[in-house]
Image 1 (cartoon, rainbow, N blue to C red):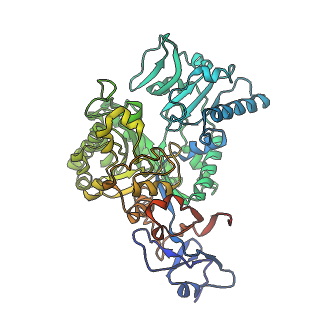
Image 2 (image 1 turned 60 degrees about the horizontal axis):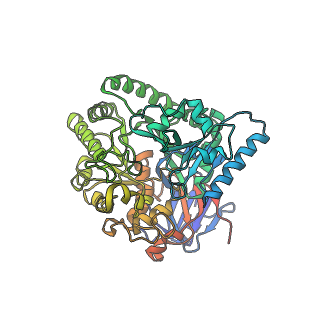
Image 3 (image 1 turned 90 degrees about the vertical axis):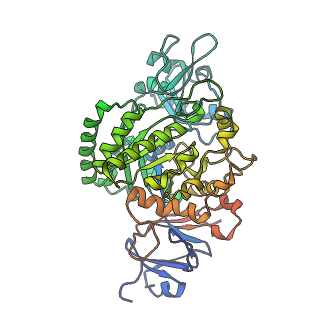
Amino acid sequence: MSVPADLCIVSGRVFDGRLRTAHTAVAVRADRIIAVGDDAAVLGHRGPGTRVIDARGSAILPGFVDAHAHAVFAGVERLSLDLTPAGSVDETLALIARAAAELDRAGAGDAWLVGGGWAHELLPHPTRQMLDAIVPDRPVALSDAGHHTLWANSRALEIAGIDRDTPQPANGHVYHDEHGDPTGYLNEGGVELLAPFIPAATVAEMTDGLLEAQRFLWSLGVTGWHEAILGEFNGKADCTPAYLAAVADGSLRSRVSGALWIPAGTTVADVPALVERFERRRAENEAAGLPSSTCKAMVDGVPQGETAALLDPYCSHPHSGELHIDAETMRELAIRLDARGFALHLHVMGDRGTRVALDAIEAARQANGPGQRHHLAHLSMIAPDDAQRFGPLGVTANIQGLWATTDPSMIAVVGEERSARSYPFRAIVESGADIAMGSDWPVSLADPWQAIHVAVNRAHPLGPGAGLPPLDPSQALTLAEALAAYTSGSASLVLGVAGRVRVGERADLVVATEDPFEIPADQLFRVGTAVSVVAGEVVHERPAA
């Protein structure tokens, strides 16, 4: 032995990013893996200063990589008014009242009270009057957990000029009560009417949010991620400066990449200038250490808000939703961006939205030949024939596994038959497609283990749909497939690295609280992260029980 290891993890079982191996230990020197093998072989690299971590029979695996997250604003939300812990309406209102009182004590004048994370399960249609009763004098605007809806008080609506005469926006709604007045509940395009009046977070606030997000993600075993929007969106500031600041001072230690934002409503005429602008931004970002060769667009909305684009109408009305970017523009974007070396990262949730996205990528393949690794995220609804197109087109499914449960809110808008066909993971895999996994945090939980549980079981004992039958178990992933999707699958897609536990790779590692392969599949939700390692340094350790 020439140079001793800095870290040895022993007495575990290595999942290498694709397969569960017979290896039990890993040795790390600086930021690289220098040995993978049995305990005796790895401890042969031990020196006087080597730290040894006993995995106690649990899994050792690559760090999770979240292929679709909004980390900066999730972190900002965690540092401001975070409503996700509330378990009741009263708890939600109490958190809001407490935050307003803190602003009052701080002498914040008429500053906006912002935050988010309220649950539709608790508040199907919250009203401005509920907010007015506890915060009457300062404007309030709170995002739902899905971040496609705003709940505003009367003062916020007044500032934005939203009243009974405000025309309904494209691709969204301003809801009204029986008297014709706005209720304070706005979704999709309705959010965009209010968002410009909400003060944007400063670069300092976003940087603090980014570092809070990094700390929190480490606690879950997430050692890298893909920021799903770089650009101004729904009144939120472009978070790119926060990333560049954290890269420059070394405080961002996880590997990350980002997607340049294609605004809703982009037209064919806008495409040439957009592509040129994106080429400049990519060059600037990558020179500063922020890879951004991916472009993000929302092709449609969400089924639960009846804004996803469907092939057939919703159950509740004769409409089938609208595209945020029309099919002709989507095709032109795909062809031109693919030709310039950009990968598309497309939000699609309705079956028509998915078809439009696949058609656009097919046009790019025909025009340019095999090219970039385009990926479609969310994939709530897919026509069976379209599920078979992923593999032949070389399209990666960027799935949010946590969502693949029987969902009463989905059934209510699209019916039982269409809902039962949602999230067809197995069909996509059998088409020959690659899969990656992400959370869409803060839209949903960032914990990879919970998403893996659902991807394998198609149900969750504690989450939405608890107690209901699983969502078409024939579409489940195996445990190895789900783990691979959240580690090497995501790492190769959004970071361009292998994401494997093997000699020479960067030491981004996770030690689980137990070995998921040794417990019943319906108990996967109980697995957690005991230790996280980023570039060879232990950044998180769960306190001993």
